Length: 350
Length: 179
Image (tube, rainbow over all chains, first blue to last red; front, side, top):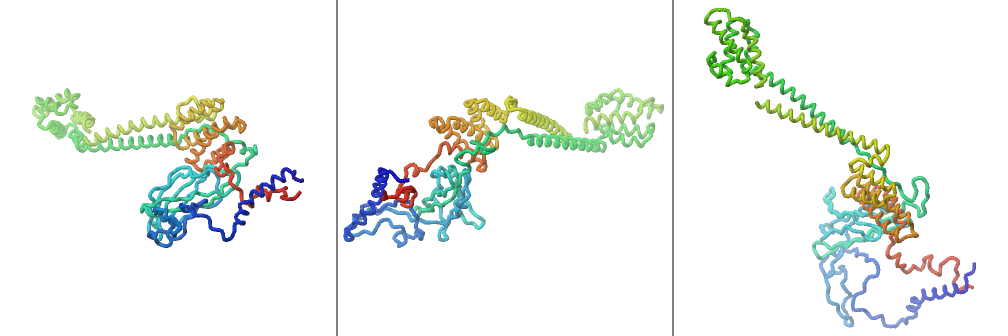
């Protein structure tokens, strides 16, 4: 297809316009004077690549970043401004390929230079870093060998229309010594889109992924809580029963009526010894010798025996008859009386 | 007497454990009831009072095209929840905005752009919490297709390199200087 004459003319003009600057330079005479030098030093027009040499040497050394061109007689001397030497530490670059939106990219920068530790005055701010990345975290870590690293996490928050190499931003941080700067170069990583520009409209590849359904409440924590409470309750019940058993056993050995009950089981119920044994239990409980006349002393000391007051009075009367009148003591049975007293005693004291 | 005090203490512990078991049993029963309701239908689950039920209510509002009500419900939830539920809230909130933006489409960019920006904010907040949320990645990319964030240099159209295909001298179907 032939281009139209007007379009051809436009193309010619554009081509001439593109080639004009180069042609103008070429037509400059070889002996022409150089262009006048501006007062200020020339400024870089593109990204600054930090010098690879060691610039941490004192000012005035030959490999330090030049502040300005050396002064010449026909060049005005600019006022001396302090220039911070730039150092480029070792950087562990992230995997440079295979990223999609949302992925995290970790950059590790060694915090040492020529074997000496360096310390950034501030960590880089956590903010959006350019069009593609956001700085999510910046921290100082120490590895197993004791080497310190500045670790920076970037997240990819934007995506190009097609697979493309993007650059992790360069860093330029002042160090705590106030004399040097830590600088890194941009690091390339390739990022690809997940979705085509035009929706495929097939299962799972529609215009957007669907909403998440209402979540179920996880019953596991409640089940665990219920099991724990029931287990603890069962354990405590077992412990309580064991303790009750121990208390009963201890009471049978320690309490006066319980001890007497055990001994009376080996004696004849009608024997004088069984009567004496019950008297001794009553005396031990009251802390003094108890007779019919001072039964109130016993009941004051051991009020749990109050339900047996009448039986105890009958016991004392029968005992008087049994030992001093030399007659049968009636229907009083020391063994059963002692058993009932022991039961009340354990209920009150065990 | 010491053993007696210990027994009383243990008895109190038994009472406490019974009370805790009763409470946990009640919560377990409520959770199972809620899950049954969710399985039977979202609207039924929305009648409960837990954060999950609030989520179900927001979902129900969104299903009934009540955009403002659903946004309010999700926003309220986002302030009071965390963990997996917060991630689900942020994702569905982003979807709510994006769905609305897609309804207007690129033709009504004045209406769709703010909604697309809101959806991007939600998805990015979610991806900050969970960078492996693939559905959020997918939908964030769809939102970026609707409202792209171009590089400043792209917008300013920098000078093209001489070997670029867009240079007149190398443009296809154009021969400089020939008739």
